[in-house]
Image 1 (cartoon, rainbow, N blue to C red):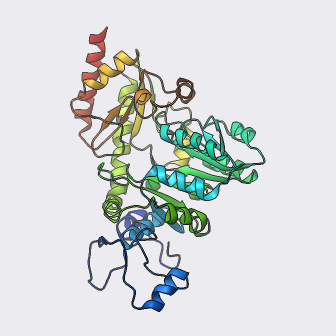
Image 2: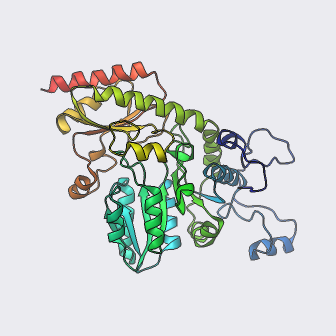
Image 3: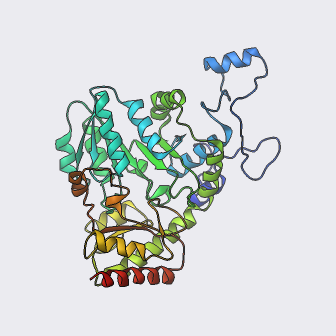
Length: 398
């Protein structure tokens, strides 16, 4: 982020940041589809490879279109640097393998995306152990620390139950233990939540979700300080190669342009739908961070400007009833992706969290009666009618 420029609002940064026009004078961001770059002479090539001169070398090291996306996302997060990756999971891997060594220890939330849990468990093969604790229990995070703890990792709000981690409090605990705090901000995006301003050291994004917003491309990003990202994390990404494609970066740039408007609309619809679901007799409990009934409502209001687009609820019954409800959908798409303009519905216990052990699912609160909805931009009345069809299907199960 350019610290010398006049401060601009996020709506402006989402549209303008990062684009430095070429000699062609283009108004839209250019798409550079190239694997390599031509040098003016052998001396320039030698200087760039030696690091004496900045500039393009090879698209695994950096690409102009990808760089525009990185600069824009960094501006939105209020950060010095962003590093784009091939997926959200590769962003997490790059942070772990860039910053950690054998013998290091991670403290992580037990309320994480299923593949994130699996990835952290895989790191044990390489001598990096993880202790999973309750996201909302700050004392549990403190007790889990050892002299080898180097990283705290969490998502807030959690997927799918909208449990919140107190970023300010957890940053204090992490730093007192000599660890860095990493926050996955995919659900809220920088429009609704600013983890770095609350004390986090790094932010992770799955650009596949709301940043894209239309379910088109895979991508991820790491956001933070130049000192933290520009060293071993960048070295890992450059060497191992989990880089973002220029075309996907261009797609995500188009997504960022409308991100403030979309997050406002997603949040408004999700809150309205959550309030409506609370009144339905076949619903036991609704999970959405900006519901007044949420046990962490005060923290949600302090930490997030809105609730985002994802909600979950417990249906009266079990897997049979949940499947009947989901299968009755005529508008909502049955898919595990989220953050789309199209509303999606899924059964977390058999999809996003299906590869976890029963014990891990139970610890995360993901039972057979749980349904997750990522609220899109369709008519709220049409979505309610679709859900009413699901309730009718459940009653027919009886």
